[in-house]
Length: 275
Length: 293
Image 1 (tube, rainbow over the protein chains, first blue to last red):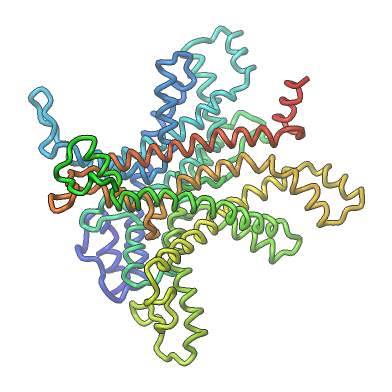
Image 2 (image 1 turned 120 degrees about the vertical axis):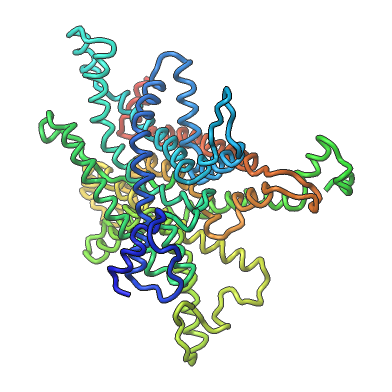
C-alpha cells in the first residue's frame, strides 16, 4: 500500500472519516506518521477553543480578583486557587464522573427537555475542563500584569481626565496585555501540551477516535517499541510549539510596537509543565 | 477491623460507614497516600541532583559537555512531559532487560526485537518471573522515580542554571581577587548565593511536582488514583459493602488532598523565601533591612 493511499485512508481517522479499522500488523512508518498526525487534529481543536474562550473568561476573572468588592474578589480567588492548586488529571476525572451522573434522558426545564448526554463526551466535557483550567492560570498571569502597570500611566490618565471604562480600555487593558503576553505565550504552549492528557484521564475515546498521544500509545501497546511512535509525537509537538511561538511572537511585536526596541518585552520560553 | 463489622449487611448509617471506611482495601488506599508522599520525598532531592549536574554541565567551559548539559535542559521544552513519562518507563525497562540479557545470555541466538515482540531470555527478566509480587511493585515504583527525576531534573537544571547566572558577577570577581581558584569560587561563593535566586523557580517546580504525582497511575503504580477508581466503582450485592458509583466522592477527596498539599507548600515556601532573603543584596532583602531599622 502506498503512502498516499495510507494518508487518504487514515488522514482524518481521528474524526471518524476514512478506514474504520486501525492497522493491526506490519506498522509502516507512514501509517504511524499519518495516524498520529491525524490525532493532532484533536489536540489543536482542544487547544484553540480552550484558549479562545479562556482568554475572555480570564480577563473577567483577573478584573474580579483585582476588585475592591469582596463579592467579586472572593469567588474569583477561590476559583483560581482550586484550578491552579489541583492536578489537571484529577480535574478531568472529577469532571467526567460528575458529567456521567447527569440524567440520561435530559433535563426537563419548564417543559423543554435539554439533551445533556453529549456533555460527558470528550469533545465537550474535556473542552470545558481545559477552558476553566486555562482561564484560571491565565487569570493569575493577567492579574499579576494588572498589578504591575506603572503608577505613572494611571496618574497620567487621571491628569487627562480619562476615567472609568475608557481608562480601562485605553490605558489599563493594553498595558496589561503587553506585560502579560510573554507569560501568556508559555501558558498557551503548555495548554497545548496538556491536551494530551484528555484521553488518558476519564474521557474514553469512542470508536478509537483519539488524539496524537492516544494513537502513539496504541502503536506502542501493539509493538512494544516506544522508540518510534513517541518521537513522532515529540516531532509534531515541536512543530506545533514553533507555530505557536511564531503567532504569539507576531502579536507580541504588535503590542510592543510603540516602544523603543530596547524596552520591548521578549518572549522567553520558561518550563512549566503539568498542571 | 472492628468486631461489630463481621456482618456488614446488618449495619446501618454511621456504623456502616465506619466499617466501610476501614475495610482492608481502604487501608490499602490510605497507604497509597504514603506512596505518593514517598515519591515526592525521593524524587525531589534526586531531581535536584540531576538538575545540579545539568546546570554544571551547561556552564562547563568544554564544548561537548556544554552541549550535553544544554541539550538535556532543552530536551523537555516543546514536548509534552507525559510523552516522556510514557516513553521513559518502557525505554528504561527495555534497556535494563537488554543489558542483563547481554550479560546473562551471551549465546542467545533469537533476535530480541522479533516483529511485534520484545523477547529476552527468561534469566534476563527484571525482576525475575518467580520473584514475589512486592518486588514487581518496587521495581515499577523505582522506574517511576527515575523517570520523574529525569524529567524534573531537566526543569531544575534550567532553574539552577538561571540562578547561577544571576549571582552578581562582582561577587565572583571579588572571590577571584582574593586568590580563590575556580572550584573554591564555585563552592564558597556561587553555590551559597544562588539559592535565593533559585528558590522562586524551585518552589514553582515543587508545586508542579505535587500536581504531577497522579501520573503515577499512568505508569502502572497502584497509587491513590488507582484505588479511588477501584473503590469508587459501583459495587453490586455480591460485595460485602454494596454501593452505587461513588467515584465522584473519591475524586473529590483527592482534590481536597491536593489542594491542602499545595496550600501547605505555599505557606512553607513563603517562609523559606523570607528566611533566605535575609541579608541578601536583593529587593526582598533590602525591604527586610528597611523594615528592621
